[in-house]
Length: 227
Image 1 (spheres, one colour):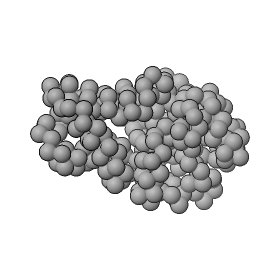
Image 2 (image 1 turned 30 degrees about the vertical axis):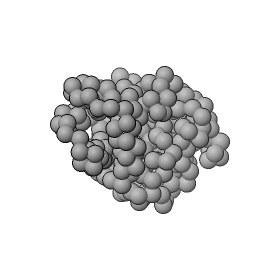
Image 3 (image 1 turned 90 degrees about the vertical axis):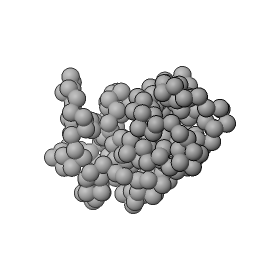
Image 4 (image 1 turned 120 degrees about the vertical axis):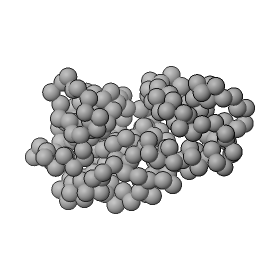
């Protein structure tokens, strides 16, 4: 990996522990709005429904607002709870506001970033919403490590679309053959970046079988073996 000069990280599910922080945010907003639904039951369904909506969002099949409201509505339907649209909108807005106030990172995040920061230019490429992602990065103490933050809203397209990777190269003055993408999403991060000519490292935190000959790590600190 001696040819690598620029390292691009995904944020959610890679460095920033989305599930843990999301669970706390929902606990907070449920209490604020006196939602009596079973929180744990809600969270168990929400995780999969949220993933499905993000896939639809990446594929341009739902809008930002449809994602925000739809994932809540579908989860409540699943647990047989019926709430009016105004409450759903209030929950959606407050959830987005509360989410970046809780900033649990995956084990080894600061250690690996401090290690890499010395020898490489570090950047973020994220499909998340601007108003949330910048707060997450700042509130979790990650700002100091990163040179550029590239969001899908700024690029106009979402990972795995090659355009966002080309846009990231342009913004950072990098070239693909000297760049590596590190992320948890096989489709958006790994295949998307690979198709754009990047080296890749798959954050395979659940130790899933990997069919292709691609570097994968089960913990962030294992990246030290390669960079």
